[in-house]
Amino acid sequence: MAVTVPTDDTAITLYRLQACPYCERVVRTLNKYGLTYRSRFVEAMHSERDVVKRISGKRTVPAIVDENTGVTMSESDNIVQYLEDTYGEAE
Image (tube, rainbow, N blue to C red; front, side, top):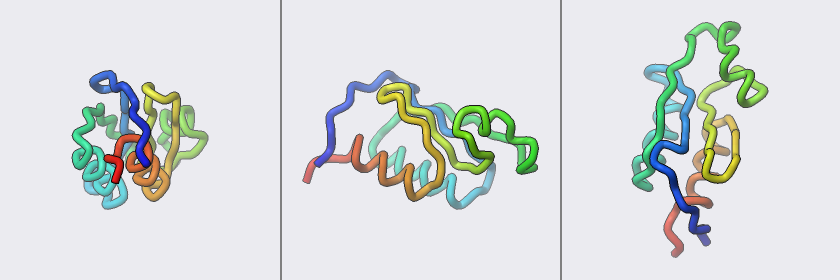
């Protein structure tokens, strides 16, 4: 069952790479639930993704920061599940 969470327009920030299939999976899920978000494109070189390391503790993308709930996470499977659980419609 989904939890109702009040949303601030663009309270979600997505850290991503261009043409990354895992990032695009998260984008599709954000769009599915009509969530507004900011995209932050990061360095392609893994060792230069310091901004992602600062926010999530890892240099992998995708990563999100959801200011509505205080959640920061990475890994597309985890993010998609989080978005479905938090913003999905109750069935």
